Structure formats: structure tokens, C-alpha cells
Image (cartoon, rainbow, N blue to C red; front, side, top):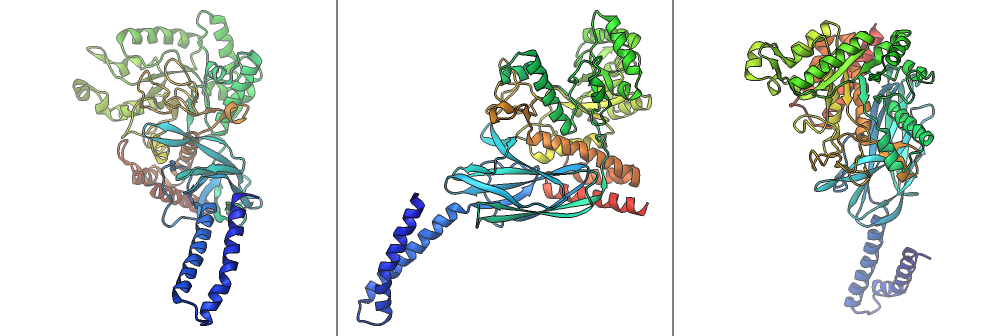
Amino acid sequence: MNRHTVKHIVKTALLLLLCPLIASCQAGDGANPSDSADTSALTETAVQSEKEESSMNNPAVWIVNGFDKITEDTEAPVSPVLTYDLYMAKNEAESCQISMRSDKRIGSFALTCTEEAENGPTLDLFREDTVPTGKTDTPDGLSPFSGKLTLLADRSSTVLLRFTADKETEAGTYTYHFTAGGEGGTVCTVNVHVWDFALPDEPGCETAVGLYKHCIAGVHGTWDEEELDALYKAYYDLLLEYKVTAYDLPYDILDERADAYMSDARVTSFRVPTCDGDDARLVQIYEKLCSNPIWLKKAYFYPLDEPTSKEMLDNLASLCERLHTLAPEVSICTPFFLNIDYNSSTDQISFMTGKTTLWCPKSYMYITSNVYSAAQLEKYPSFGERMAERKAAGDRVWWYVCWEPGDPYNNLFVDQRGVQHRILFWQQYANDVDGFLYWGANYWNSETGTTDPWSDMATVKNLSPDVYGDGSLLYNGNVVGVDGACPSLRLEAVRDGVEDNALLKLAESLLGREWVDEKIAEITPSLTKYSTDSNRFITVRNEICAAVEAALKQN
């Protein structure tokens, strides 16, 4: 018998003992009026105690969108939303969240889907785990949700609900009911509205993200080659589920098992080893790539990172000369964040032209004054215009972020607003950038940052102890019983951003670039000006979806 049952029995007995006294007073049997007052007070106390116990077992519950970050300190809304409308295209994933908060600790609080729509989008639930981000803890890591969680007193806990519609899902509304707190608990309803069009299988933009085998080995405690290869493949495949492509394939390019990945529409890029000192091997790889135009288009070299001096540019020129000679049709990617003067008549962009064919500037360079000297501002077109010139000449353009830029620029930091991660991809589309490069999905290094992302996301302490999540979009799953990796709220946002690019591309094909630019400007007129109003973002996105659906029906 638990303590709540004992309390209930005691209160019931008390009320039974009091009933004769109450009845006596009401019948006017000569009892003292003060006795009646005392009895009423006792009755009210018992009822109030019952209410308090009930409130402990029925905490505040509310639904929010899928990208706002509900910290442990977030108070329950005065008027909680218990019915939520979620909109998505076919062949897309979208999410919402159910948050719970109690004034007392509840050791086992249930959240279950009590009614799932037939033939509707598939549903996956994830527990959101928080990590320290300075003065507060912020949700980020996503682990499988078992159906129950512990609610700490005066701390909000949140579960992510991800809905995924395939291309065959019928357009329409699908209703899902959830109960928080078991039988008699709070009922939440999610109405999933599926638009009558599908996003393409090919992601809306190219991606290239670092994935490091040695970091996987460290957190999983294995250097066994077969085990490590299997873990790397599991990590790679998880990123691919989120429409994100890692730098390196799970298999050597010459291995026939790599062919399926190179042909997979979701794989938008892969890095080709430069094979330094082994020209014959590089030629062999190149010949294989040339046998399939799709493979060749996705392939790229990454010989040098962020040149910042004349000497580094000279080295880049030497490396590019060899690669252009041995594999002339493979793109050469060079991330850079400066525009130094190589000499009095040539700046860095001019020098790199003809050498780099896959340009990859840091995002803030699209504000020209951030990277041009006063003399360069007088001499050259804007940075955006020069990248447009390179695209017109046949080159491609990606961009990247890393431990900088910070606010007011959008990035993928744990402590930035969730909507900022998605807006980053709208800004990418607005600037006609073809792809997104990010240097790491699992950079866990004890010497410079962290070896336990679940408890410490200050990943680049050597650069700044106040940057959280740089180079780390994943969590090691072995901590929570997963044989591989666990995703994050930020990875969810990256996938959504890639899908937003696909939506914007589809809208442009139907409604024109000017119309799309106007809709983007409603959310973000420039790199440093944007709305962080999540409801406004959702409204504008739904307006785009409605216009796309109408245009397709009209056509």
C-alpha cells in the first residue's frame, strides 16, 4: 500500500466521523455554532488537500512547435495549447513538442499515443535531454522515448513528436491523440495536415559535414576495425536519414559497395582522397567516377582549409595544379573567410579563380564590408556579385559556419533559438548558395573540447569556452542503449532547412524567383535582420505551401 492510498483512507475515515456532527448542526439539535464552523473548516481542509494531491498527479501539459527550445526553466503557459495543427508536404518530416511541468517530483510520468491516424504519417517520439549552456541548461540531445519519464519539481520536460510522410501518403488531415499522465490524464491532439504535393527525393541543397572515425572510437571505447567500420556506417546512415551527407563515404570509392551510396539521391556529395604520392591510384579513382556522370558531379577534393596567407595560397595553387591535371572534372572545394591581397593587383578571390571550382566562403562574407579592405571596396564588385560571376562561369558555391559567426548571425549553436537554424537555410537560398558545409557532426576531443557531449557541449574550449555545440550535431548512442548515434534538435532543424530549400526551389519553378524572394524577405531581409517569431515563420511557410499546392492544381 503506497503513501497516497494511506492518505486517502485517513481522509475518508475523517469525513465519516465528521458526518454525524455536521448532520446534527444542520438539524438544530442545540449544538454550539462554533462546533459547526470548526467542522466546516476541517471538511474544506480535506477537500483542499485532495485537490493538491490531484494537481501533483496532473501537471501542466502543453504543445508547441517542433523547433522552439523549451528549457527546464520555461514556465507553463497560462492558457496551454492542447490541440495543435501541424502542416507538412509529402516526402517530408515535421515535428511538434509536448512539454510537461509539475510543482512536485513525479518519478514515473507516462505519455502515450492513445490514437494514431490510420495510413497517416509515421510517428516517432524522442526524449529531449538538456546540456549546460552557461547560466542555463538547453535541450538538444534526442534519445528514444520509452513512454515514461521523470518530472523534477519546477522543471519542464519535453518530448519531441516527429511525423514523417512518404510520397504515397494521401493529402488530408490525420488526427493523433496523446494522453499525458495515464488514465484520466491530460489529452493532447495533433492534427497533421498533409499538403497535396511531394518534395523531391533529392535534397533541396547539397551538404557536406565532417564525420570523424577516431571520435567515434573514443566515445564507444573500441578500436576494433570491423566494429569501428560498422559504427561509422551507422553514424553516416543516420545523417543520411536527416538529408545530410558526411564528407567521406562508409566505403572506399573503389569498393563496389560504395556504388549504391554514390548513386543514392540523398547523397549530395562525397570527398575524394587526394592520394598524395600515389598518382596511379588517383587516376584509377577518377576513371571510375567518369564512368557515371552522377558520381562525377557529386565528387570533390578538399585539399586545403581556410588559406589566410600568400604562402598558403601558393600551396593551394600547387595542389590544384596536380589535381586539375590528374582529375580535371572533379571539383575542388576551398573554404575561406578572408580576402587578403595576394599582391598589389590581385586579391584572394582573383587568385583562387581557376584553381578553386567549388567556392565555400563563410556566411558573413556576403556582407561585403566584413571582408573587403577600403581599397578593395573601391576596386571590386560586391562579394555576392563575384560569387554570381563564378557560378555563371560554371563553378558552384557553398557556404559554411563554424565557431563563428555568432549573433546576430545565424549558426548552429545549442544556445541559439531553434528558428535561427532554419532561417540560416532561407538566407542560403536568398543568396543563391548551392550547398552547406559544416566541419563536424561529432567532434569530441578531450584536448580541445569534450569527450562527453551529453554533459558538456563546449566543444571548442581552445577557441572559446562559451561556444556550445560547434562541430557536434550528434550524440553517442551507447550511453542510452543505441548501437550508433543519436540525433539532436539542431540536426532536426538542419533537415528542416534542407527541406525548406526544396520547397523554395519548387515555389520558384512555379511562381518565379521574385515571388520567392519577397516571401523570404518577410522572414529575413538580410543576414543580420530576421524575425525570431516562430509563429510568423510557420505562417509564411504555410503560405508558400498553399501557393505551391494551388499552382500545381492550376497547372
